[in-house]
Image 1 (cartoon, helix red, strand yellow):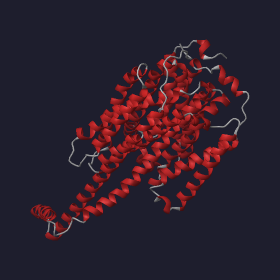
Image 2: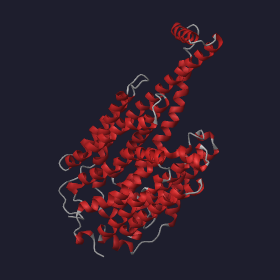
Image 3: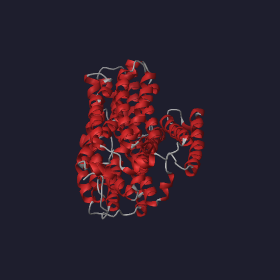
Image 4: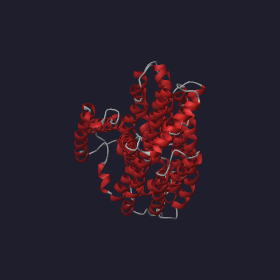
Length: 520
């Protein structure tokens, strides 16, 4: 079998081929969120049980991501990519046909494991296919696909669930999987260095076991922490200890093994380490803000799921429109400066959101999300390109796997922290505001009497009007406390964007002079 260099495959065909499975995987990460209440009803499951449909997928994803490069070398990248597409498509079919919750969770684990490798392999193939001066554009195209998922996923999931059945959110992967599989068979070929390396590999069983234990337990701690009240729960303490012990052992094993399952030596490269740390914090800020905005609109403003999605969508569109321009600019400009402006814009959007109140209109909530969309386009593409620029082709699969893993873990940490802070701040602000709710406060007295009189004028008895007015006042206090809690967290996320700016100094500027690529 010859490599794509000899076959001279058009690089745009390779791009479309690797984009299809990546988009399929990204959409599946978010598509199930909307359908959870429907699944709960038809599978007879509680809220805490049905969330394992999301958690199991993320855990399997987190385990497979870092070992993608190693698996590509063991099985051959083309064979591994095709196996993942087949397994993902079959697991989707089985998820749709699942008769009960236990089998659905089992097939979601298979789907997550197959899906975890699709994005890093696609990125690695793209980074090799395009010569260095065009890699920015390649990552921009990939980024458009990556953004397409979160925009389309929830809307598509909602529409399919309402008009057909939740099972169709899984069946929809079948045609995409078959097309991706066919294109992969014709247009993707293993480069020579991967084939030579595979012959001499010894399997790192300890690394495999410790990686599964550490990533799995970390994901469980982050997903279930707030629900179980963190470290007051023996369940969370147990999984935290498993994570710490297995992570320490994993680092030792991987640094001493001849053919480690994840190459931690890559982190000796200061530019790569700094890029990964920035991506971790960007994942933290992005995923937590994307969770908080719809929550704010649905719990405090009374928006429906569809309306909350409409507030989110223009931000995604802003990212889509900006990405190709950023990709083109990267061929001539220093990517680190673009990331710097992206982080500033991201922080600004969070500080604008910090001023959101309960009197805002649809546009008040939409335009800060559009600002964030522009900022994200200026962060994702250049950061990926600059971070991976100093990595050799041989290690590209390993590097893209680690890079994606850190973004996902950052997202999980962000969501867990945001949920915890929200609950704590809401209690704190409620206690603070409640101190002003007393008969001696003239403002409170006026509002309370006004409400009471309005209820009496509608024919409600004095005692009932009294109780109802008090209930309404308490409801207002709770909503206000909620709004203050959201504002405080948006401010913290804004600070996170600013804190990582100094790390940009550690990134190396990639040279655009090198030639060569896999497709021409």
